[in-house]
Length: 101
Image (tube, rainbow, N blue to C red; front, side, top):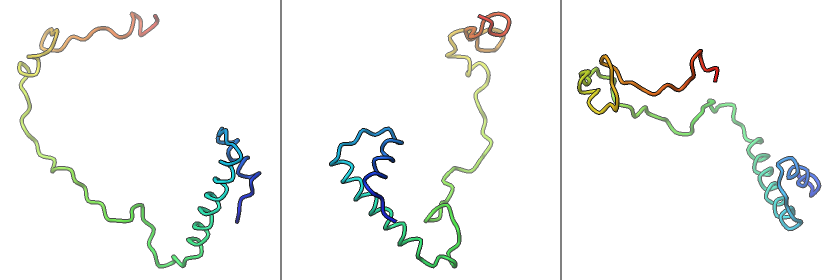
């Protein structure tokens, strides 16, 4: 399969690309080279190749989930700009009545 200059212009129009004639000509060659490679790949016998999402095995690099003690309430509230009844007070972000501003 090979793309013509008109097909490349159409693709450029769909992609909202303003290309001049030199760019169209260069892109025609590049797109046709890509399509040639895809054609070569499609001719390979891949029946024995197992489908996969990655070309190399991926190992989870996260640490083991271990329960550890956290801060006590006073330590957690130490740098809070405003606090009340053991909680951080934050500014209201919605108006009265559920946001009917």
